[in-house]
Length: 508
Ligand SMILES: [Zn+2]
Image 1: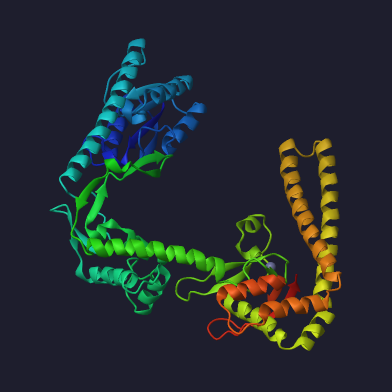
Image 2 (image 1 turned 180 degrees about the vertical axis):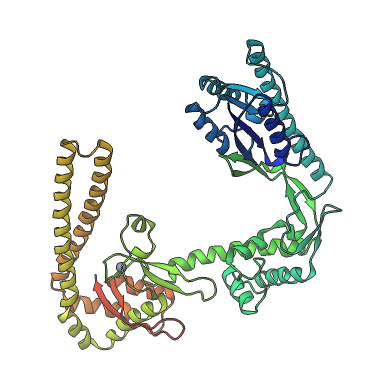
């Protein structure tokens, strides 16, 4: 006779006596032998709640039941199989459908109508017990928290945990670092990125052991009320999502229970830090808007896509114009390769374009020379080649589509397969159509002869000035320049790199 043994412990119950995996297994094995089993397969769910039916070992057992591999299924008790009555009934039904008997090692009842009733009743009891346990644990937590005791024994940066007293103790050397961070933001008014840079430069160990400081750790320290001496219990509600994931949601503030811990930062300093953080955030938003002179009008010469602002990590906080094909997840996921254009430091391109136009003001002859020869032949040629390539690809795709439809008609492909392939072809076609319109429009504009006198007048009007604020620069550039098509052509890298760029200005 083939027997299946199913045992389960949830993480919370592992320590609980009488329900350990070994106890369950021993009892079930013994029982299986008594029943005359010759072949025993064991299914073990270690660390899974009985609340959900989708447990790996149970699922595997239910799969095997479908093939009628067992004559008996043994569990230690009904609540090991499932904690919800409805689940118990489902599993029970499956067992009997598979022509097997359902047996429990710890309770003696048969699959009679009476047993069925009792079985159901036990299921209800198990559910009730579970609710009670849940409520008891929450009550315990709440009680502990209201007495001012720390529940979690996690060690936040700056403290160690005294488990005997259930409270945090300040770690003096970490506390110095925390005070330093608050000094940086409150007294020197510097932002989290710069604080990061400063801490790393000074070789100060981060909370992440050997790793460097990152902006989010600094931000978390500044905003954590723990450092002014209060943490909140019952702040979050945790819900189980699926087998192993938990979802965290904020409870209403009235439910939070404040717990006092030793403070490292005084209340006034902590509040000042929050204010400064907000102020930094606001000015960062302003900077983003105004500091990059050419943001929004830079185009990658290699692939014709926009170049957008990106930043390097916090160690060398440099901003770049980066081709969209390197950034956009849409392009990455579409399976297209990013183009091989290098990113260009914003400062270099901004300064170059501005200075170039500025100097043109004092050299009108150069202006006229420049625009008489524009637009450059080489760039136009590249655009034309790209356009031809697009037309060829488009034809090829339409041809593929024809073949696909023929295969579908001949039933070589299923409807699903055809649909997937068609979808991919349509996406590519749409992308090409989009690029083609953009390229064609550009070529049309580029071939129109520029009115030189008009352009020179506009440039002079905007650039003939002795001093410029950032806003002035931005306005001047935008009054004149429609697009900056750019490519970095040097091969230098790293610290000593000297970016060389090919710039093509498209004026309005
Ligand atoms: Zn590109």
